[in-house]
Length: 203
Image (cartoon, rainbow, N blue to C red; front, top):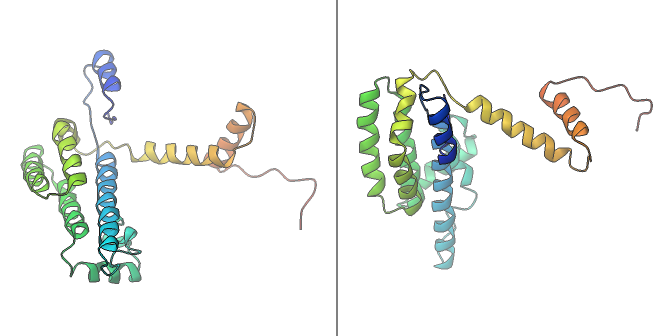
C-alpha cells in the first residue's frame, strides 16, 4: 500500500496491518527533488544578482521543474542556453534527470544498486538541498524499493491528485458557512455535476 513518510502513521499501519507492504512511491520523491532544485536555483539567482552578474536564471524556474517533453519551445531554448553554463542549478537539474532512470528498472536488486550509486553522487554534489533529499531517500530506501517489489502496480498519484482538487474546491468555496455547502461544491466539482438552471441570468 502506498504511504507517506509520517512516522506515527507508519507505526499505526505496522501495528494494525502488519502484513501490508509499505510503499513510498515516485510522487513523493519527485516532489522533494523538485523543491530542492527550486531552492538551489533561487539561492543561485540571488547570489548572481548580488555579485553583479548577468541574470541568466531569470524566468528559468519551469525550465528546470518541467519534464523535458512538457517544455514549451521557448522554455526548451532557454534550458539549452543554461546548459552551456557551469551553474549549480544545472548540476541539480542533471542529478534529478539522472535519478529518473530509477523508475525504468524492473529488478528490485538492480534498482537498489542504481539508487545507491545515485546517492553517492548526490552527497558529493556540494548542493545542500539535494544532499538533504539524498539523506531522506537513504533513510527511506527500503520503502522506495518496495515499489519495485510490488511490480510497480501501486502509486498514490491518483489520491494526491484528488486531494489537490478537493483543496482547490474548498478554497474557491471560501465564504460558505456550512459543511453542507462545501459538500455540495465538492460533489459538483469532483463529480462534474450539471449546474442548476437559474431563475435569472446576468448579462
